[in-house]
Amino acid sequence: MAIAAGRRLADRLFSGDPKHAKAKADYTGVPTVVFSHPVIGTMGLTEQEAREKYSEDELMIYKSTFVNLFYGPWKMEPSAKPKTAYKLICVGPEEKVVGMHLIGMGSDEVLQGFGVAMKMGATKADFDSVIALHPTAAEEFVTLAPWGLPGRSPPTKVMNL
Image (cartoon, rainbow, N blue to C red; front, side, top):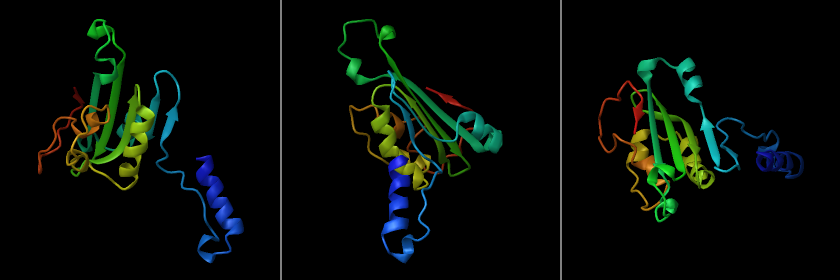
């Protein structure tokens, strides 16, 4: 955010271009990452904020918890391997993505890519239409069930996968 704000300030003060005279940073929908272990990423509305803003029948919340493929060959019980968790919060009959939340290895890189789609107004159907890059953690967002069903009615409950 500091880079974006600095660029807008520099444009406003030094560019000499009239179209930059009122350049300001856009603080809406800013992807945020905590570089912890595991990495945590978030963008848009939290589940609680979405429930306060929209009616229950407008919301569809997709969740997935999985073992990142990095840990696949580790010689340990699957239940002991570190987990990654993703949440996608969608609203309305078109299921516009209004929130993304991730925790686990690579969440910073995954959020950066999907953040562009979210800023562009992506829907669950847009995510579903992308071919998954396998084997990656990011593929989880484009294969969240139910997927690939054009014209489906959004379910009214949380999908825990």
